[in-house]
Image (tube, rainbow, N blue to C red; front, side):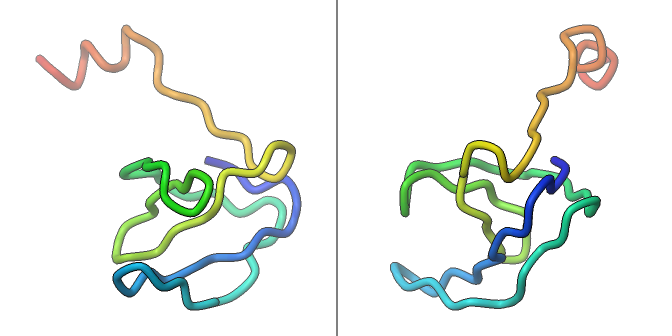
Length: 72
């Protein structure tokens, strides 16, 4: 996932979000999970999340060929 516009990074504590910092354009992160809480959020690991906002991040899933390589 690549950040295209400044977006907040959040830490989850149960059903509460705590602001951590602003992610800047050009930064890249691995996405480990996705759920529909708080309007839809991508999990970056360690309890950190960003909210899915159109135009702020560019998230692409791996191709089927790459996924097949990982499963072998």
